Image (tube, rainbow, N blue to C red; front, side, top):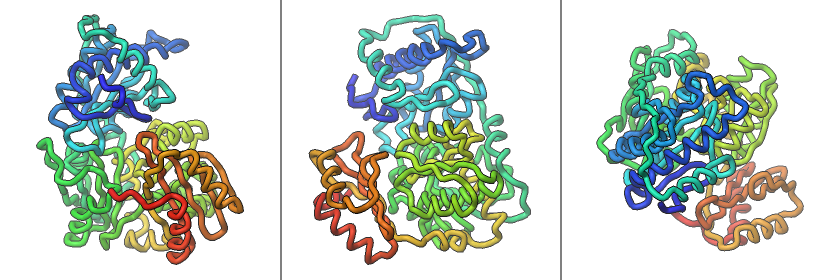
Length: 458
């Protein structure tokens, strides 16, 4: 088993070179051992407390990988609920709905079709990453000498579509508004779950790339602007109110307005934050530190408490839970909800945008325009050998600004700010800059490029 498949937040690699059935068995065994070991102090007698959930995405090798994963879990004596081909957020629902000690979604998210992987969640769907157990799972899995164990664990297939649909749609508010939207499923899990959940609603959906044949028409990563071309075209041609492009496992999404313009995820966070604070006064809203200053400004404007957090779903979810925040948004397209077990959900985000647009009775572009009051660079990568030294160099160069080290280095001035943080998996520094004007943005980007060198173009 290649240890490189164990990342900061999940397990991911090329099938079958890095991840195969043997590796899946060992990871299943290790995950079951680890998650069940955490039950000290809990009532182990609860019906499903020592069981696990397993789901998978639409990749051609996912059924075989999931089957091997389950066999590895069974070998430890763990019972498994096999909940079939699902979107990743349905795993978070299943763990809480069935009351298991955790679960694993077999998916490689937005990676190419040759990849596969595992997203591990613990009790109450809390994320399991490198700092919260994934290294332990790696250690156990790498130490297993063979895949011959035969425990007495059982497998029960469960279709939770109806229950999951009810959970998602409980957030939808009644309306007489007639909405038409375009959705690009990126040949991923949204192609299954969107029809299953929204089929009965008076919302006309223009479907794009809903088919599952083991290939992706475009990369299933909505953060890459060229991957939004089809949904932008469909929105304009069909007169839709807005459109969404989902990633492969349907936990992330990107929005376009009725003109086919991209709505960045920090502006979505600001829009949704105002909506939540109208219904949940004085609540906390969590946002990641790459987000525009407009996010904190809108949260304060509507009487909420902004909580700035480091990048990554493990940190975001913990921050939501610790502060009992009602909502959180991340620049990557993850949106988190207190009433969804403090977990993220692409479908629930779609529901809340439907609520907002129906209630506002004005075009999305008009809702977003007041939020476009700064110029942002987007995330830019620089290949740097000594990442820590370069960040320290930047801090010295801009020492007159307000500096913090929550995640990398952030330096703030009255009219502009930047964050520079290290990649967990690549020799990159990732830079985000925002300024009051486009000219100031270009000027400051030039100054930082003089320190970091030329950006890496993907």
